[in-house]
Image (cartoon, rainbow over all chains, first blue to last red; front, side, top):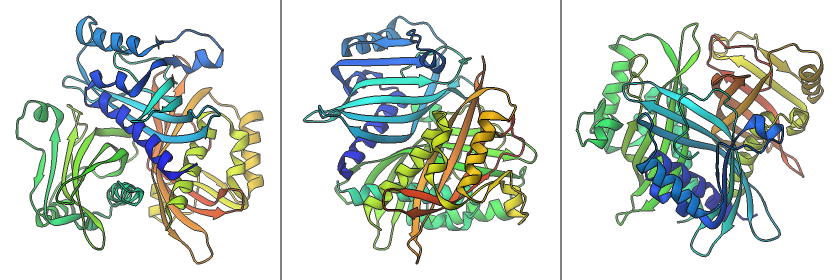
Length: 157
Length: 157
Length: 157
């Protein structure tokens, strides 16, 4: 696969981390296609083929709902978040032109007056659409290892 | 922007992490241009537009001073440091040819007989000069989230 | 050095992290050449030029032995592991065509019902062979900073 494509996949992952870490959540749904799937699920559930996900959104509209909830209705302890991604890798180009990619993530949270602590670590398994103006996630499955999550999951992963 | 430039920006960030993690601090100022700005500042101060920085150096000479202080005059608990960078991204090329880039960092410290603990996590916002022999930082603003920093900040971030 | 080679080195590091994080250890020895060296050693021993390593394997067969031991004979607390790599960098091409590369690693472990905790952080210093079908490690020296390692080291780093 060509180098330009590898570069663009890496950039999409970096931008995804940035909108979360910069608290620019309003831009987060724009990184997904309209007809998308976003799932945050624990590794134990994936391994046992149990369907229950911590977050499941089945359209870009549902992502917008999530952002609206975070901004307006959810009650949670204030924090800052640093979402880092590593090991981003374009695995293959599917027959329909979608890119199959994966990465590892590590989410750090800092409460007021607190140390930074790791909240979640895990792997993501993704499908990326090549649209005329940009690459966007068609499917993002974020699988976290952490069994005892410190605090509540508020921001997207 | 061309792929070669993306590659070289990634390399500059990697080398910056290496001189810190390898304890080759004497080489750190050489990664900056003569007329540079280096700032380590907390996220709360940035968000409130408060100017106080934890470290502020306004020339390469000031970086050399910092290294000399670490080696000769500062008193601190001995430790080893692993400085990691992720999400390095060349954002754009400014009109004057300077590269605008950003990254996320995570600094690990290990005290004698101790576990490795995260000291600081955050984002850096940088301007990079393309000099004939190498890329060098013209400005590096490292913004850390961590509000309660374990131990003291000794090494550059 | 050409961009394709930088890309392939980054991919080798990513695949190495994946086989460990996905618990596909049986594929791990295949990332090394037959006549390889794998060493996991503490930073204090490296700095003092002491030879004692936590793990030392001097052929691909020894790596297979390690995997067999993990699967069949070792007794340890069950856990999941996320092995992340950052700062992967192709340093130079040696006269014999071997690639000299380095990286930073961070190993996360999660015990049953537990939070994710960092087990080891450090740097790796590697030599990579360019074989007709793939890049493979000829030598991998993983140097960890962590002096008090939580739990026991079971999986490769």
